Length: 287
Image 1 (cartoon, rainbow, N blue to C red):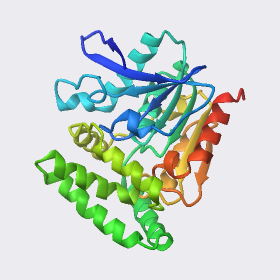
Image 2 (image 1 turned 60 degrees about the vertical axis):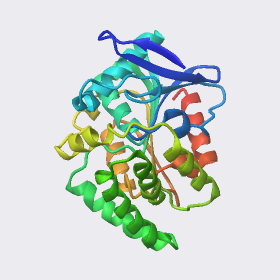
Image 3 (image 1 turned 120 degrees about the horizontal axis):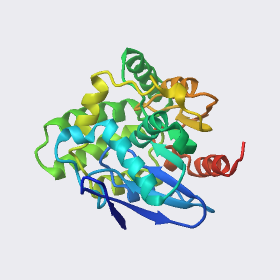
């Protein structure tokens, strides 16, 4: 693990993997373990920088819950860029990590060389809620146990808000995330087991959700983005619906949208080979 200090004395961390041009991987959550989240994403020919957002890995948590807000996460990515001594970053964000990447590229458009956004919410408004409802109906129709997993996931989400022990939280999180995959096969089940058992920061999700609910709109400045952008969406994603990612792609100038058929939220696991091919080819492209 590599650590480095911010100007305020807090420590940030990352782990690098592979060799070649660097790509910064921003994990989902917030609060999930970056190494477990991206355990299977081996992008050959690149040095993958698995960044640990505040409160994960060896990155210090903020002094108060407000420190988990989006602007603070953007500041951390800029600190990482300076630490790496790079003029521009190649960013690859998934879920909440994609939201951070989108916000960073809007704030620092000249500091991003290329960017991949996978299933990251940009705003959670009435349209987003309608898209979630439609995605849930598709999920019910496509998965034989879809209704069962959705209902269990809803109950687990409610339990997460009231649980007082980490063991209960972990069990609830695993059940909740079972609806994040379209097909709950052996590989997907193992990923969810490992992710829910890995180190976790349960304090980060609440402030993120509250900020989104209060009207945070990451598309407001998306027109400033100049980096070539690939947007990936899962057809059966009930967490960040494909319709929403289509809206993200439309807001980012020149962005390319790819919808992955029969795939839920964790496309880097569910459609591993396709995800690796798409992302690798995109970052190798010069156009």
